[in-house]
Structures are given as structure tokens and as C-alpha cells.
Image (tube, rainbow, N blue to C red; front, side, top):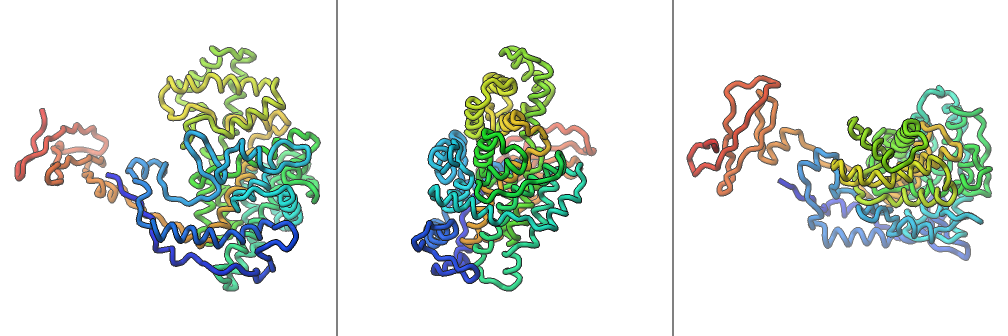
Length: 523
């Protein structure tokens, strides 16, 4: 039995709508006065229209059914259930991700780039995700400068990172540092003083901007403490976000690595709102936790092996393959290794996706980067051969709905090529990028008055009752009841007289009885 999801209009009345005004705490203006319009001004100008759009949609269509939910979906991680609002990106199973309606190649084409660069600046994508508009080059330069100006990390956070043991996983250190920044939260302080709901988004915006600005230094300090000498170069105020991250990590001398960081930070930002890191950030933020606490929660989800650690697993698998097959990259050699992985009961890491049914466009963009900058690298050649052979093997294997590579199938090889070989650190870079995708939605949530998230849960017993299943406590097993097509009354299924826990039960199908007749087994 499938239950319907309906859009509720109850929370509509709570959506704040106030005339655009100057902020009480920072004096922004909604319209430019001769200078380039800032990100905050641009968002504030668009906000009333966005609120009205949501109000109109819910008022006119609030009772429309948007989807059905099956029991398999409930027990299968809520996969495919339409129940979240995420403005920045939409994932199509066939064409991949679109950021505010734009594909990755389109973003690479229209978003501003650094002087002499070929890859988009992630500052531009952040602007696009928050406002829905492509920024000008000047607006992106201004945003880079704004983040650089906000980048100083409090001394106590630096000392906290320094006190972490070097064998504490980098993602644990990253989450710890972001959580500690809660002390700096403007939102938390203003909420404690009793700010108005209409001001929530402004403080969320300021916290998000401050947090994003500090991430390169925090991420780099963790890297250099764990793997290097612990010394981190200062942020260069006239450089872009990706350059500063690359420089603080110690790789800015290689212009191609800086370009890779621009691409990497752009394509890893956002992938709809249902993935663990995005949903967790949204969920925690819906309780009015600050951006610091919300992102820290999302980072903890990203650290899981089934989410952000996947690129590390891909690289380990590729290195193991390389050690086994040596320089023999023939089709047959690759095919044999793929089958040996599958026959061992393992998955081919980096292949398949919960939503996608084609090659991930994020994989394609990284492949194109490799073809341009490292076409003769042995590991890239291996990745290319796997890409050629794996879809056919996985299709023949028959246990995956998507036999094509995802974003994780390539990123580790690129980082290795440029000398960033510490695999346990890779997810931290993913986390820096993901902040640029989830925090715009957090700002939007507070701006439109999104309520606290509170879905309904049931026990297994309650779901069984909902779908018309019968439970036999002695066996600890569920049995789907047969239903009379005319009267919809459960027909009892003959069961053995005594069943012990763990015993095998043989069930017999029954035919629907006439009114008042007993059920009889079908022979």
C-alpha cells in the first residue's frame, strides 16, 4: 500500500513577509548606489519575490499530491521520496546535476574565472546558488576580498587544533574546529537577545560568510599539523579562495594544482539536498542551530565511509589493482580484476549512484581536466581503462542500476598526481567545498521562514498494521495477509501449531473464501 505525500499549508502563515529595509545591525542597502551590488544586497533585493512565490505556490497548490511512498522506500533509506526543498541544485538521473538550472559545462562557461585561469571560481557558484544569478567578474572579485577579510581564525581555535593528537582523523579535527567557532556566532548571540524572525537570515548570512572565510586556514592547519611542519602561510588578501587554500596547503607554486582546486571546489559544492551532509546541515539548522553547529553536523555525516570517504576507497582499490596487474592494462586484464572484485563479494568503488543512471558529469569534468593536464599519467590511464571496461562488466553482473562512474572515481588520482598523497585528508577538501553548497540553502531557509523538520515515524509493528500484514510473535516473522478482493477482510493463513524461534516456517497460499466460509489451502 502506498501512502500519499501532501503539501501542507499550515506553515504558510508563519512565512515572514516584511518590506525590504535597511538592516538594523549592519546598515546594508537593498539597491546599489553607484557601486557594484554586493552579494547581500543582491539576495535582499530578490528575497520578497521569493517569499511571495512560495506563498502563492502553497496557497494555490498546497493540497496537491507530489508523490507516493512505498514501504520499500521507508525501509530503504527514504530513497526517492519527494520531501525536501532545495533551491540550489536539482539532480536528474539522466543528465546529472544542475546548479540553478545550469549544467556543469554551462557553469564552466559562464562563471567568472581567475586572470589567466580556465576553471570557474567557486565564489561565483556560491553567488549563483544563493541568488540564482550569475555574478559579474567584479562581484566575484569583491566576494573573494570579502572572504579574505573575514579569514582570521580565533587564537583559541588554532590552539584547539594544535592540541589534537596527530592520529585523530582529520575530519574529526575539522568538525571539532568548526564546532568551536560557535563561540563567534552572531546568530546565537542575537537569538539570545531576542531578535525578530525577519532578521534570522541576516545573522545566518554573516555567520555563513565568516565560517566559509575561515575554512581554508582551518583545513590547512589540520593538514600541516598532521603531515607537515605545522606552519601555515597567511591568507593573501588579493587572491581568490582556491589560490589561498592551495597556498596554505603548500601547493600554490603549481598553477595547475590551483586550477584543480578551483574545479574541485566548484563541482563538489552541492548535489541536491537529500545526501547525508546536505540533509544533516539542513536538519540541524531547522532547529535554529547556528551555521557553525549545522555545518559541523553535516561534516560528521560527510566523514562516513558511505559518503565522503568514497574517493579514498577508490584510490586504495586502484592502487591494489595496479600492484596486481602491473603494466598490463589490456581489456582482458582489467575485466579479470573487476570480476575478481565482484566474485569476492565486494563492490567496485566509484561506480554506481543512488540517483544517477548515466556517467556523473562531475566525473566527466575531472576526466577532461586530466586529459588536458596529465594525459600520460599511469594512474590516469588505469582510470580510463576501468571507465572503458567496468560498465560492461557491471551490467553483465546485473546487480547495479547504474554501472557508470561517479565523482569519486577520479578525484583521488588527480590529487595524487600533484603530490597531495595523504588519502585520509581528502574528505576535508570535500568538506570545504560542501560548505559552499549547503550554507546558501541554510540562509534561504531562515529567509523564507522554513519550519523545523519533523517527519512522522512508525514502528515496524505499526507499518505492518498500516499495510495489512500479520505478525506471528512465536516465530518473530512477518506474514503478508491475503485480502478478500470483495470485502477487504484479512483471510487467516494456516500456520504450524508450534513454531520455535529460528525455526523454518512453510507457508501455504490460501484462496479467498466466500462470505462466512473458512480459508482453505490451495493445493
